[in-house]
Image 1 (tube, rainbow, N blue to C red):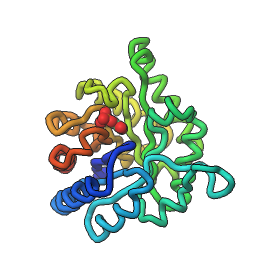
Image 2 (image 1 turned 120 degrees about the vertical axis):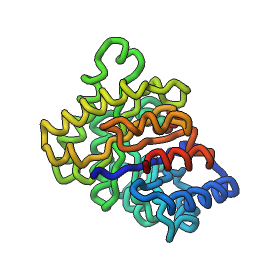
Image 3 (image 1 turned 180 degrees about the vertical axis):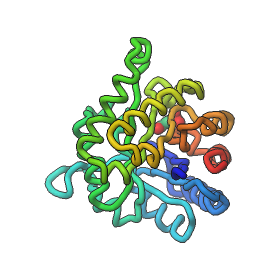
Image 4 (image 1 turned 30 degrees about the vertical axis):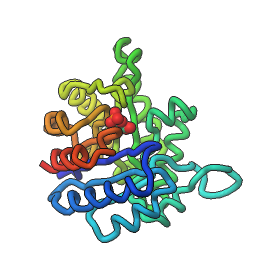
Length: 251
Ligand code: PEP
């Protein structure tokens, strides 16, 4: 059975007192889950707080980005080794906001995923098409290319230890959610593309959906055959919303 996950991407939000309340609620909710893991990917300065607040709970925490380099003169960057030191188990790589605003290309995303694996953590590799690409009918081509480059770099061993997240760019932070059928279709395509490389990996790799997931729509999305949970932005900042989404991933 594939691992199910509810991963909160806090983006550049939070403050010490607000985080504390959220961590406490996530820790309690995570303890009640039987098969899903609740994960919060927080801004770097809050990793120490996450570690203190969540250590000993069933919740995991992680980073939203990482350098592809292990160390060196890269001002402002954070290495995978540093994230591991703070107890991260997961790291998001290739989020569309990184691709769009910080110029990350597929090759860089692949290097970042490799850096995460090298430190024994799990990369959550994001792929997804823009609205223009969907309207041109090239969704599969786009996500297939994004997946393929990472898969080539990671190889079977690396892929086996990774998580994939399908995040249509037009659904992120827009309130526009892809329909369960649209999500299922792309997830099935991605799983098929993985199967063409290695059947075992295709069957075991969790594929998450991200894009305006809320408490109100999580259950119908996560019920789809190839959907193993979600990557949640805005709704992960509201405890009641995120807790319900975690429960939907668990059922
Ligand atoms: C995200 O940041 O990955 C995301 C899916 O955001 P939102 O849930 O707000 O659309």
